[in-house]
Image: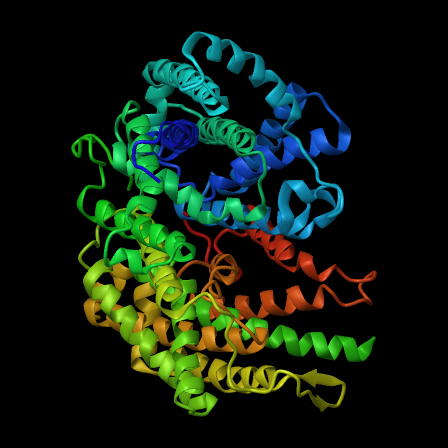
Amino acid sequence: MAIFNLPFWTYVGVIAGIYTIFALGLYVQDALTGLPNFGHVAFMALAAYGMAILIIRLNVPLPIAATGGVLAAVGFGLLLGIPSLRLRADYLAIVTVAGSEMVRYLALNLQDLTGGALGSIGMLGPSNLAQYNTDWDNFLSPITATLTRLLGSGIANRDFTMLLIVWLLTLVLMLLLWVMVRSPWGRVLRSIRENEAAAEAVGKNVFGYKLQVLVLGAILGAIAGLLLAWEIGVFSPDDYQPTVTFYAYLILILGGTTRLWAVPVGAVLFGILYSGTRFLNFFPLSLIDSGDRAYLRLLIVGFLLIVLMAVRPQGLLGNRKELLIQ
Amino acid sequence: MFDQFVQLLVNGLITGSILALTGVGATLVFGIQRIANFAHGDYMTVGAYVAFVVNVAFHQNLIVAAFCGMVAVAVFAVIAHYSLFRPLRGRGFVAISIISFGLSLLIRNLIFLFGGSAVRQYAVSQSAVYVIGFVRLSPGQAVAIAVALVVAPLTAWFLARTRVGKRMRAVADNRDLAAVAGIDIERIAVYVWIFAGALAGLGGVMLGLEQGTFDPNLGVDPLFLIFTTVVLGGIGSAYGALFAGFALGLAMELSTWQALAGGLGSQYKPVLAFVVLIVILLYRPQGLFGRARVL
């Protein structure tokens, strides 16, 4: 495939936008408030499964199903947060990673409900292909038709419409977060990160704030999960490996952990990096056959996590003096 | 009904000993360097693969193979300590844990790239079954339980009676106090990594034997059970992790006993572990034997 391929890069742009929203959740939780969450992917998984199950099994209309998916993620956030947020951060880290593995494990094993290893298309059993995307595509197609009339079919397609929707939503969410971070509420979060005891001492309900942050992050993760499920059209438990959570950490480090505006930059860099490995087909990398490319990609992700975290923990655009992921 | 109980007891002992041995290492590492070591599961995989090469390619028996696996992982853990974890000491918990996840991705995908994604098995019969009383064991399981019966008491003895074992526990329990008491923290840290690496390597071989077959993802699934063991025993408590590993392994297997209102479906065993984790955090976050302190 040629490097300059508009539909391909449109798709990369959509994924980068979705990952921006995903990483924003982690930005609020970890970079801003200091709550380590190594199981962020669970929110993505629960929203996607919640939405798809409601649509496929109960024929619930799309907006209600989407809300249901987000609520599932919020409920799970509360389940993890209430026991662990009063304890040292180590415990939250462990309970979140355990929780996310649990969600993936249940998705794999509750076959009748989730379709097991087949994922969303197996929800009605192996002989009856299940589809949750009809309403979403019906929503997209008139927009795509209008855009095609305006811009021509060279640019406009389904992914292009998704690109506009995803990045519009990203922009709105970032503006909202920007206002929130600057508000007194945001200042309390930063004070919790810097000195929890001091925040407690001036009468702030630290546990309550932490729980709010965990829920806010869960909502952002859930929105990303819904968008990703709609963009791709199918999903399976394998899409929600713990690795995905660390993609979000890599995005924060690539952009910069201290600035909200660095998150989309990191996500775009990550998108280019992640999809760009397919263009690494020169010698000696051409010896690796296409089936093994995924391993090469993850190898690079691991290597970058180590090197960037060791050398520039504040991120490429971050300010080391202010704050870093600790 | 009773023979199922005995069978589950034996399975639980195997699972439990794997969790106990890997959990002891993970909790000591947690104690000396405040890290949730995401690479611990992949250390197991390295042990399993080194032992596989020795066992299948060089036709050595399983005991020799397992020993080579332990040595290889111990050496690897020390190299990782000197090249990665020690230079970065002082970084926060999240930073170090993210780095360990990077290391985990690196190890796993190197094994995928150079060892292939094929499913492997040790040179033991997969079809033979030993029947001892009520209990049916595959040869792999028999080796695993024999190893467990030797190594688990040995580990407990090492931690309780030897100088190095006592010092490792002291450093993991309270680093500053141990330093004031004249313990050479740097040296002990290296010993802890050797100890944790060797046990993780052995745990990997045992898990490979117990499952029968394995691939480079061997260490991925047990990781969260190891973390659960660490919390259950109390972070930094070696005895706690030993006990918690066996308790968790036995509880998970015995929960499927049919006399318990039909028993839990076997696919819910890890869910039980997760429920235990949540309950422990709610009511006894210092672990089963930990003293109450600020957490």
